[in-house]
Amino acid sequence: MKYVEILDIGEVVKQSGLPASTLRYYEEKGLIQSIGRRGLRRLFEGNILQQLALISLGRQAGFSLGEISQMFVIDGKLEIDRALLMSKADEIDENIKQLVAVRDGLIHAAECKAPSHLECPSFQRLLNMARKNRVRVSKF
Image (cartoon, rainbow, N blue to C red; front, top):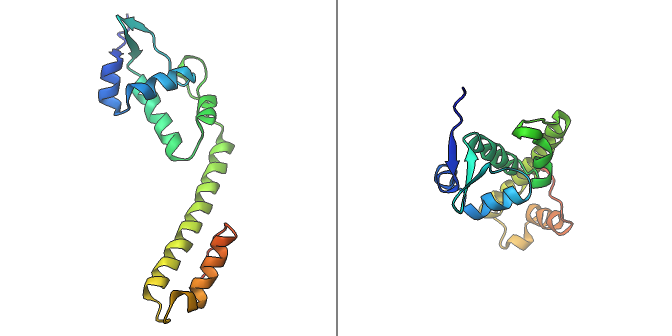
């Protein structure tokens, strides 16, 4: 007979660092599933911690909860669309490029010798890109 670790919601909160309200919300959205109750406290199988770690990783990568829920199939097994992962990785690469451009612009603005930042051509380019709600990688 296989032993299955059972955790109540308090233990899951303690070990995962997530508030109980988040766990209840994830359960409501179908991301996780309790296996019963002990009094008023929800009970979860021990693999819940791994599921929560996967949800956290997905959130950090920018996946929506809907996208993450599609990765879990029956019995909490994982079925990840590799093309979706590649698409998200490309999106993250683009965000990195934009953040690098912003960082470089801030460094340039801090070091610029122009009497006013508004007189600095490089800073003006950064402002124009921000105004158009796009920041491209450019050399300052």
